[in-house]
Image 1 (cartoon, helix red, strand yellow):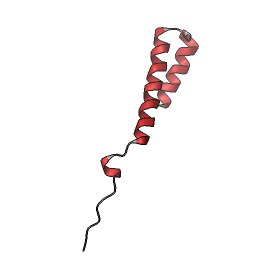
Image 2 (tube, rainbow, N blue to C red):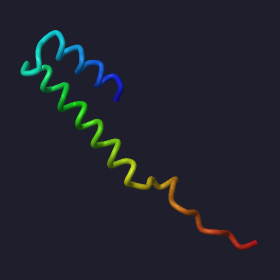
Image 3 (cartoon, one colour):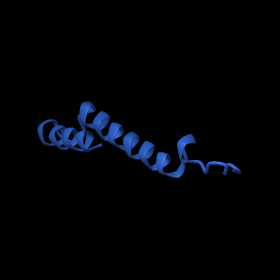
Length: 55
């Protein structure tokens, strides 16, 4: 996500905020942030509680 932030900052500086490439970078950053937030709300199979084995 840090890369998306850096690219957006540079495109905003060089191309301006309304350039299509800057808008695309802004969208890419928002998508990455959304995916990270969604991943934080979901449990992966390896994070689920394991059934206890009886010995």
